[in-house]
Image (cartoon, rainbow, N blue to C red; front, side, top):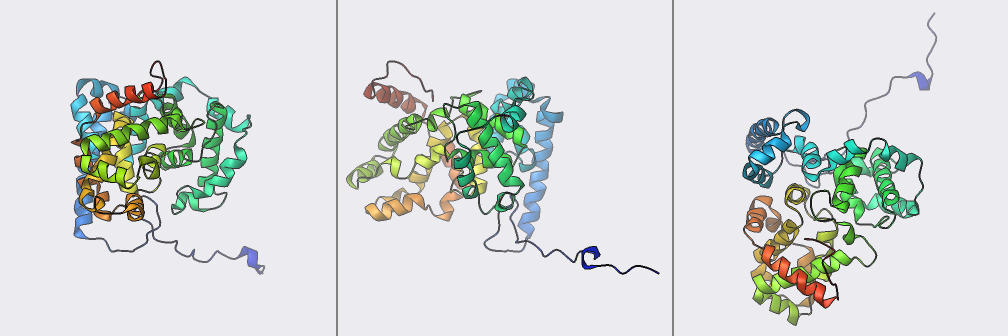
Length: 349
């Protein structure tokens, strides 16, 4: 005779469906049905993936050769956007983090499991603020939050002079959506220590020295390239620290639409911080005619809440690419260093 089964032995019932999410894993605010346009986009994406796979080779084996041989093709394709399924791998290749990982076996594990950090409580406090509407980070003490804690703790031990600053969570969180903990850690190292481009660590050091420099340079660019708006900002006592600090500290990952942030990051990792200046100028240029008529309070709101059409990557980014900033950044950097009594450049742009 078969034994009766208790409650704990019963087959589990159907799992209730979770909230609908978009293609990136963020909970949807508005649920819309798919359309023929979605099918066309998927077909176009599949063709792009085939081109990219051919370009990078298996596991990135052909990447360096292709970049040396056809740098202009690589730049053009990156500006059009890296296919999402390859984004994590390509980010590691263009940032130099893959090489750091291979040269430092076992280091990440040592930092996570065998070291202690003075920033541990600060990291725990801030974790729930990072991408709170993404399914990977939503569960308290879930796998996403644990991975984010591990990466931030490891970096705070790896570079005790910088330690941990709140804005770093958005960098690490973004990377974890596309790669493993260890890969994300080494990409964070590559960015802050300057494996390919200028080091970012000055964005997070005491006093935020690099943020101050970048805001000074951005104000210089606004006055130079958008003089009427620059004059209006001066009259209304508006300066970039009131609206642009997070652009640099999180490279637009804090409050900008995720598809736009990803496209900016594609270019940022390949071309460097100039894209942050260019996108900032493009936003102001796009909204110029509205901003120039607003008073202080409305300006502050508008500069922190850009209209949806201004956030369209296919409109904003071509505008950003057309803006030239290199010469002006060099001039304003020298001016900033003179003003602050620096004998020579310590932070590169």
